[in-house]
Length: 465
Image 1 (tube, rainbow, N blue to C red):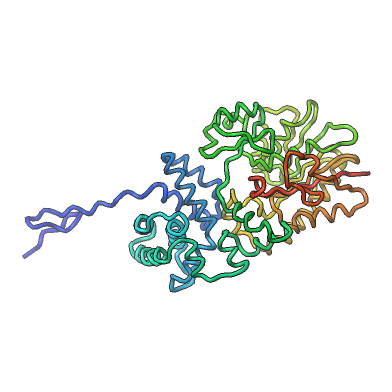
Image 2: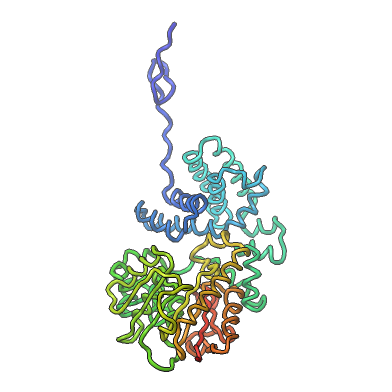
């Protein structure tokens, strides 16, 4: 007897009617978005702080879901080292041999269990559903088994106890930093007294900081619902929300900028100057945040030149300075500048660096950077500083800035320049009497646990002849 063909949608019931296919629940939008951020970071070297806002705009998630996606994505990226230490003992082969998509899904699920204390059944079930849709049914069994073991081990405190790490390794796991960064921050802080609070503050989700460039700060605070920043007279801090939706930001009258970055621009503007004050230079200006504030801070008649080696970053600077008079934007390498020596009265060098001071806002950077990156950056910083000093006229001033507290990128680089007989170091702290705890010798150093900013380093130099 010939059997009738089965219809799509499921096995036939008695009487020849097909059984309907099981209906799968729709994927969780917040968790899927968080996964897509992790996947972009691991597979394409994307930056989470650029990718996530793009995905949130495209998917138009509800505010609550958007906030959860943000918490998941940034939190799992920050905690990657600790999560991997937990997962290593629960998977039968090295994590590097797993499908990268599966590893990202395991991190996403484990983070919910270990740090967010999402009920284990919800964290496991939703992650298994994502795995089934993204990778396949076979991988979902592995994810299910491993995450159940994670849940059985308890929260972060329980897992840290189970891992049995001590000393710097415990501190690295507890604060989600590679051990070499723990050591670098200890050196910059001068000991252990503030080390753990600094690292914990660096592991916390940061507030959004705005800068009022071409509007009153009070008006920006009212429009955004934020509060005035404690240090910069142009800063407003937000507890949450999407700053890109603000009319002031869309029009360019305000922008997103860490308050520490604002202080770096203020340092150059406040520095005492001998002689004329007519020409300012931002050497490594991309993407344009500091240049935009410098344009607003300069007195009338001052010409601002902003340069960046990468043409696409120079284009971002042009956009940031759109509508400003007496500005020039160049795609130029600060080590081989097209301008004549001694052309400028004030120069800002925000040098390329490891970015160890902005890990709160770029959580994946802590796992991308290695100690081997430092020497090449120090060489670049030293060359840029020498060229920038040549761009300053005698009596002019230069602000050297890095978003890293690493001693080799900061004190050591400036020390080399300061050893010249035509360079004088000017103390930073007296220019910021309203900012406590900023002094690092004659230099300035901001910290997330002291100031609620990125760990920005600042030095001020004067050409004496």
